[in-house]
Length: 111
Image (cartoon, rainbow, N blue to C red; front, top):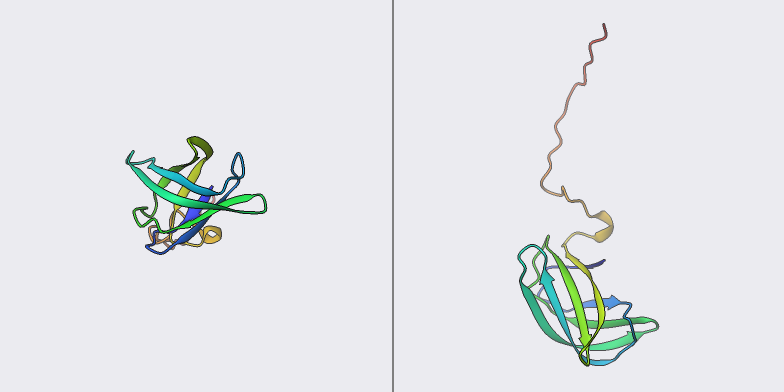
């Protein structure tokens, strides 16, 4: 899974494609919650066995997951999931800022 941020600045998207391609391509993000699509033209480059592009995609919304399809010369070279969060992926918690811990005495009655 690829992690992106809700940001108006360019982000690097790196993935392992079915075939290494460079040049113009189309990327389509389909929001799995709202079933809406975002289509953008990108320029692909390679880094060893990775294919990558750097693009600003301000339409992506935080806490949404997307299906990403990259198409080069009418051939889908990558299909994968993208999750948008402004948290660091290693520290990600679904309860961040939502769950509040309550203290308890945990008194047990033994009979």
